Image 1 (tube, rainbow, N blue to C red):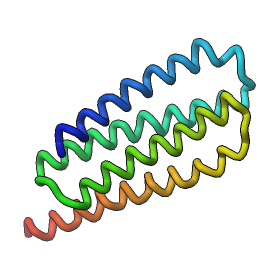
Image 2 (image 1 turned 60 degrees about the horizontal axis):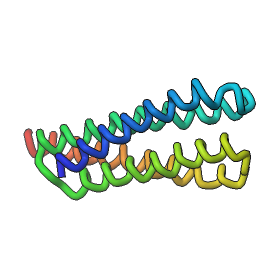
Image 3 (image 1 turned 45 degrees about the horizontal axis):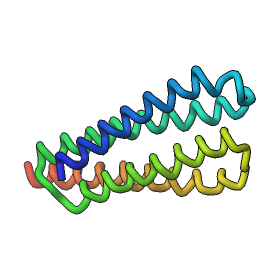
Image 4 (image 1 turned 120 degrees about the vertical axis):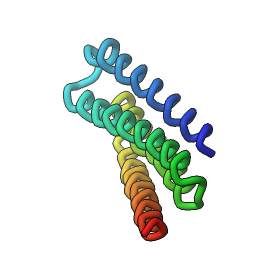
Length: 128
């Protein structure tokens, strides 16, 4: 589980850098300033949550595998795809209905971070 999460986090971080560079160098002259801000928000959340997945992988190494950590990783991966992915497609295509997918990704982010927090709290109880 730790190796898979680390690989997912690293690949998503790599992809986030690539997508960010694509936006900065190729999209900026093509799309409106409003859509560029939407795109940049997608990149920001993409990169932050890629690092979050790497953090979860490190937690697995420290604490061992658990259902909550597995779900935390899955939810951050799903959130990145749904949240950032929908913002990328929205900003490039202009199809506003795709914005309805974005909050689902946001809920995945929140749930993933909650799973990590609950695992951390449960571990501190075991240590005391």
